[in-house]
Image 1 (cartoon, rainbow, N blue to C red):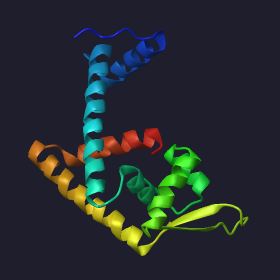
Image 2: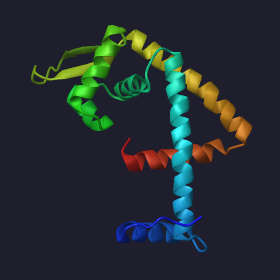
Image 3: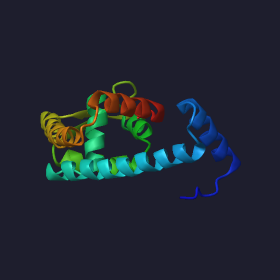
Image 4: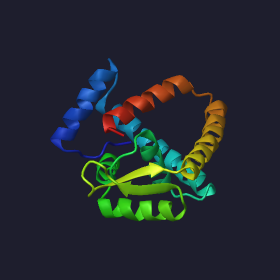
Length: 164
């Protein structure tokens, strides 16, 4: 398969990435690996979406619950951390609030900002999706004979680089 034309900067990054992989890795192999990883992540994203939907949530709602559970914060900070626009977050939070999964309250620091926290029902909904994901992904990992610890570590490193 021929590698598509890339800009000089992309070519340099691919060459650097190939050299970091060790001898015998070409920029074309690194690019092919990147495509395969991207495709696998897209399929895993679809699995997450289906799992969240089976619990009555969208994948965006699941992400908001996950971020708020990690650290209750101001809505503006959460939008920044999630890399989404504030109106988008507001729409997602409105739905979660209607479902009784999050609550909004005024920030005590200045009284103007809005903070978000999970309700008990929100924690239960998040736990349900997490358990369903455990079951579905655990089955995939087992059937594919994947080294789960290595995969988990690799994904954590990628996640840290992305700031997710």
